[in-house]
Image (cartoon, rainbow, N blue to C red):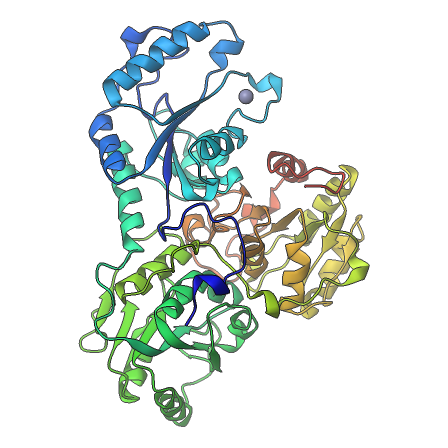
Length: 542
Ligand SMILES: [Zn+2]
């Protein structure tokens, strides 16, 4: 049984095992119609449905703050007194807010509070007695979403006619209007809470997550939730996810077996191997099975094997009709972050994170070895150019220029990669970093990542190792799968790369577009700027 006391110590802001404590709202274009540099309370017009939507959040116990850029103050277009009158009128129309956070600066001031800098989000979380990762910010432009992500908060974009298409493409979470954003926030909050506890106690739970390291890592919170409600947890994983499975808290025993309907390069189905897997799963003696999958994978073939093994309580997400293969058929809309998607399945199966645990990625501390002494003191930046799927890897020539730019900006750079990526890491590191290609297994890489100031990485396993360590990520994210589902979870992040590139949503393993345009256009200077936004300085400190 996994209990709160087994957990790694962390920043636990609230004992309630829900996603959010607070909703932060941009002002102009989000709560009220955008009247440029408005100093006149008579011109305040709420967007349609704003009052009712905000009252729903208040009724659900969420605290509310306004986070707003008001450069009109710096430019002298209105006075502080006029702004306060406007805010009084906003509260008259929309009800009270628990906090107001205003950036009075201009872009030229270089402050750390003008969105997309994360300063207002940090300040709002502090004032509301919570942490950024327990906040969700709603705004109408890319600056709002950028500020949320850079602080490790969730960001919902509610586009207006002036929102640029590239801002919409880059956002991981888009809602049609404020009431729709509020409805989805409340739905996601509710979805990780079981409506009823399990009807019968669970002695042994069999949880399943096939596929690769990243998939296993993002399922960690859901597995901890199951573990909190079961005496023993057995995890079935595939060979590519085994090293990650070893790192997960709450897992008592691991069974490794490839599943040909999940593996991207499957061998033929061997009837004898399937029969022996079914027998082996039956021997686990599970009184419940929870089968976790990605949005494009089917849980049903395994459900059949589990039925044949005599397991009679099976839960899984399935859009396809499951007949009598599932006892709990759960469904999740597209766009939900993978960790929350899995947590909602655990909830449907009657499980939730124990009070005090946070819905964040975590690793077993005893499974991560000490960091090798020869990599130097903490405070370096890790650049991990490769990926299991080449469509999600950073082109080596781009990675090389990034290393050069980071070194010029005073960063110590460690270049990491697997044994089969040594040629690339050597070439990339030659531009001014230290080559660690092939030096570590996944646990060793986790140790190196944990002491980094930031990790520069594509959509691949080490991004999730960074999230598990709370280390900020510069995400070179190929849009082959949705960023909102696969982006680094609940950790300060800056997303780079062309989110609207033609590979978008293709799920391609190798880039289908000549020149790999989604990442080949990344400007190394933007990586340096991203680290500045994440408050990672070139002096080695954080
Ligand atoms: Zn500011």
